[in-house]
Length: 309
Image 1: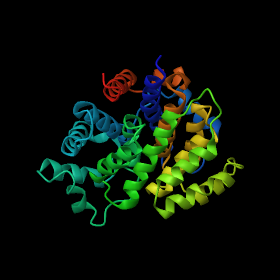
Image 2 (image 1 turned 60 degrees about the vertical axis):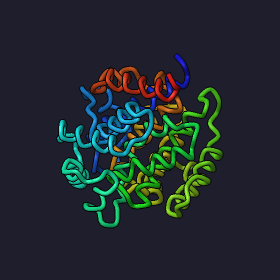
Image 3 (image 1 turned 120 degrees about the vertical axis):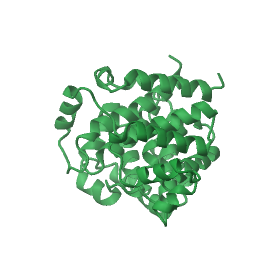
């Protein structure tokens, strides 16, 4: 399989699997890794949540428009939500979607719900398609990540979190799993990319924390595991970097930290899948993923458009 194509498939399927594996542990405390692996091994189907549902919307819009179109993407979010509102959406986005349905502009609706903008991780959780689509143009990547975020999360920290996650996915796409990952270079690229102090401070702690990833209390204390973008995006990137050669271990580690498990594991899975490719994702996990063939086809189409086919 073409390596780039494999990475597109790996990122989207990886995001969905991380979401589905983490869903049953959302809001819980830390868990033993063997318990999480047991969930992934026996739960059928592995059902995804709003994280993947909105990721699908991002990918569908990028495909149809061969790039970003704010009004179209916002409408796709709303249409998908109203067709399956039971996916576990938080209270804010459905209010935005109703405003969009009522005719509010795509980049204005969120301001009526969050007067100061939301810095939750709702934009970061869905941004993987932007990361793979613009993997070799980080200027455009940041611009589009901010724009896709603005539909629901217009606070600078929400938008920057989405951009940072997209950049991590892009770096993973550019990396070669046949060679040892240069973790310091990976982190340095992220530090150069982000301008927000709270993200830079957390990324700066990676070198020390990667020496003791099993100290989960320290990871949670220093990086977070909450619903805020700055308390989840760095944690997801850390989960990948602590297990760069093993997709399942990266996802299981992310879930084991507790907290916002579905979103953190989804973001970690998106990065890991983008780095390792679809072949590295356990087949037995894939077989149980809800709408697996749909996700594979979506990723295939996204790859074709991004490749100019």
